[in-house]
Length: 98
Image (cartoon, rainbow, N blue to C red; front, side, top):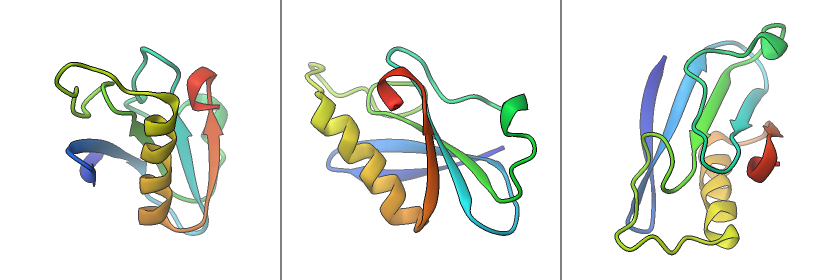
């Protein structure tokens, strides 16, 4: 697994590359209070393309903003930043990430 950081305003978002591959990327979005998996989940093992996972603002390895105050709109923006970086992707979310 490797991690790169994307900038969303003053926040550094952790985008974890869980597996390389050819074809369409699978982007995993976690639930509230969770963080990205460190390996490809079993249910996604047959995905032929790359698998990546995003830590939302204030979660996992992403920046925790001073004073908190993040909203659904900010977290949606996090996903938008990741998709702008990745290009076309299939998104799978859990809880908040859905």
